[in-house]
Image 1 (tube, helix red, strand yellow):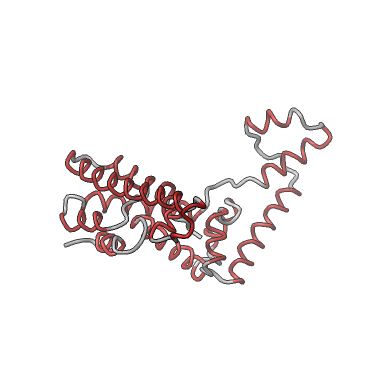
Image 2: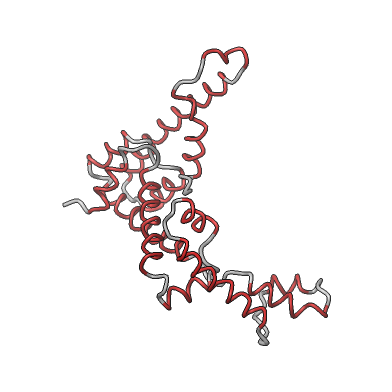
Length: 237
């Protein structure tokens, strides 16, 4: 019986863009939303968020833009983070110094060296973003389920009829697959999709020539956006 992840992948193949990106994004959004509504006051979660200075740039603005949390949750988390930064700046204990900082501090005047050390430590996340870690775990599960199902006709046909995987996720699949026949099928499917996209980009470029501007754009009109997504993956915001 197919797993829920396998089912979700087949369903995601019926929608635009990389199906792995879509499931990965959905899982991260659910995780962040759940964190705000269930774990903002959890002591261990708060300690973890202090150590990472909250969320990374990508996931902080994802939460803001998609309204995954609420204003109070953001206020609680970042009040805690800023309070901790100020506490580290006021601490009497000297912070640990990395080799990179040690080399840089040689150029700093001695009278402000201790202050700069504290600032560098206080302004540097000591742990990775908690949402990034969840994203990595989720991606591993998705890729594992996907690779396990690639020898199933339904999965391969769903992939063939989809927009295909973005190159970063296709690379991860290639690093996991062991069946030579699957390698060949994957490469054949994605080479065809890349060639098609290349043709659309060429047509988009041609129609941007003033001599052909009156022709108007068709399906190739958003090919440049799809090309960005194909090469680097879906925009999370």
